[in-house]
Image (cartoon, rainbow, N blue to C red):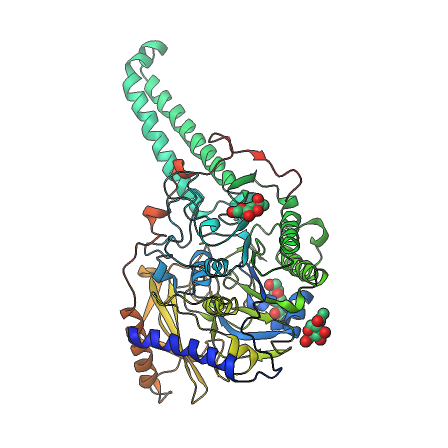
Length: 588
Ligand SMILES: *[C@@H]1O[C@H](CO)[C@@H](O)[C@H](O)[C@H]1NC(C)=O
Ligand SMILES: *[C@@H]1O[C@H](CO)[C@@H](O)[C@H](O)[C@H]1NC(C)=O
Ligand SMILES: *[C@@H]1O[C@H](CO)[C@@H](O)[C@H](O)[C@H]1NC(C)=O
């Protein structure tokens, strides 16, 4: 697709929808223009598609998510734009592949690593919240952001949700991570401590060099400098670990709007605080219209779970945490009911990407289950990392119990909610998402996406092509992660599989699968076994070429330069490093 053609396609999609909605009489006869529903977006963190009852899991209990699916439309091929938090979420809120906004790296740091880094969603990116805010919606984000905070000082908040179209923010600017609860020594923390240690050693050595003579005279033994060196070394190691601990804890905090409310946060109350915040937001905005994005801290490690749910599932702590998240969904839906807003609210549920296969200790699995799909979190192309739950409910407008098997993207939420809110999709940039409403209502039989691309950082790993006339769903892998140990299906011993270098396998010719017959990507097709092999390759190559022509050079916000901890960017509720306070006595 050439650039003009691409935007023409986008425009055509938009036009078709507009005409569709205005002229085709929908089954229930309701004209949606001007109906401006409330919009409630629910996103789980790291939840696998196989972790949910209505996606085929018969041993876990997710009655509330299942109820959403029963009363709404369930998407079976809903695809995240990336297999990790920061890029996937950047794509979700902007409707654009994260390579366009620069919310990717090219050198291995896959998500924003700390709150005190300079990278983040660039201010010239437009989020759906910004557009709906401009159309009179009250917009709120409750939960996880993970799209940056500061640029130059610890309080400029240049990347803060309030600078990206949200009127209200309560939650974590970064993300709940294992480090917050001494889960284990993360790679990023180990790296930071290594660097701090080297720094401290250099300092110790410098002091020692300057004072070696004095030290020898003072202790009147010639090996005094050696003692000094040992002591210096031990002290610097301790200092590195101590500063590391402080930073890690300082990063686990809650904020309301621009104010830190709890640092470090007290896990035992977080779930209740989040639910209370959601309920008070909905009540305050009962007259609507509102857009509320509830971005759960569940079900990321360290799997913070309250007493009521511990030991209640058949799947250990991870299952307990999933069931608690489902209960939260239920509480939120109940609030809508109580306020009489159920029929005037579009509810959406998804996960930012697939479950993590690497999150396990010994024989205990602490990451999600991706069902029949291969791979998981962090893997650019394998289905398990990117195929996630996707459910829409809007009683009276969307058919209840409908299933859609066509390819859709999380990026589609952007144009869908923008249009529903009476806004216009930006015309000055490429928007990769397409309005889902005709597909959800059943007024358009087919998805408008024929090709979706699957990046790992800034590297294109795979693509899918939905060949509508044959009903074939082709998946082409240009490169795949090299598993560790070989054949293990994951990269054990690391947080995620890397995207480039000698830790990936390049495929020439590319690997080809037909997902419609082989959803688990188990049997690669060859030119000998698949007569369309070269035809598919040519079609996908053409789409990739067209896409590449629409890319503009941008600075990569996740590259090491923008993604390293800087002391002066560290948010702290007291003079650093004493980041310790609680101002949230009674909550909102
Ligand atoms: C249900 O989810 C749990 C938790 O991830 C997983 O261990 C289990 O294998 C899943 N069961 C089925 C039948 O998919
Ligand atoms: C957050 O700030 C917005 C204005 O930017 C204000 O309307 C809202 O009430 C604030 N929320 C809280 C809880 O203070
Ligand atoms: C909400 O919509 C459903 C489905 O159209 C309808 O059965 C129900 O009566 C509506 N509820 C209210 C309170 O209008």
